Image (tube, rainbow, N blue to C red; front, side, top):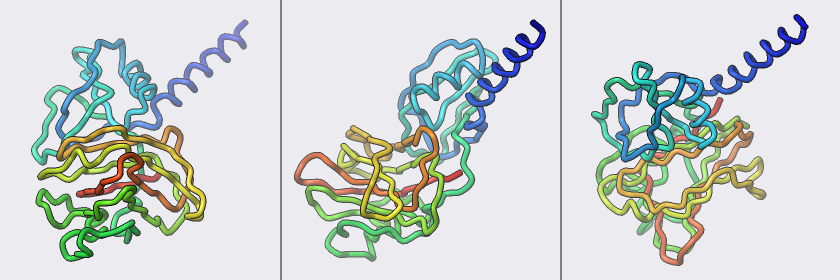
Length: 234
């Protein structure tokens, strides 16, 4: 009987750790909440479980009021603050896309001075209509980042063009590959986004790959406009 109780105790501890180990407390300094699902919860663990079920990258917990904000939509805002709320984010070690040189389907007007794909991974979030990645108008624009090494991808964050044209980011498939010839889908954003929206896509369990590609899959007259693309590995 004592052995059974010990086994149950260890099992519960394992489940609790498995539920929380992929999130860590973080300070969000550049995103603003458009809206969230908010509810009363019994604990941080309860809030974490809701967020995992929703495949959220980020969630918020108010320990005093035992309130949880999850399933959120975000927008870029340099001065965003969340008084009373603790922010939690999926664990990551590095932004594997930073300063990598993406391959793309096209560049708008072939003008790399204004709309090079390099602007999508330079670590700078432009609020203008230039120094962003902007593709031609085409049926299926795409951007692909070679991470150089095989990486375990935890989540992807896209800062949609901020000044205008956010609705152009829609029906986007997120894919991963080891060799660029065969891709596996790990995420999808229906949209359409709004200007300045911050789109976070969780990989579920970390996916292993070297190449990450985003491409629009619906419509015939599309253009990818991305201020910044972040690919976080663990």
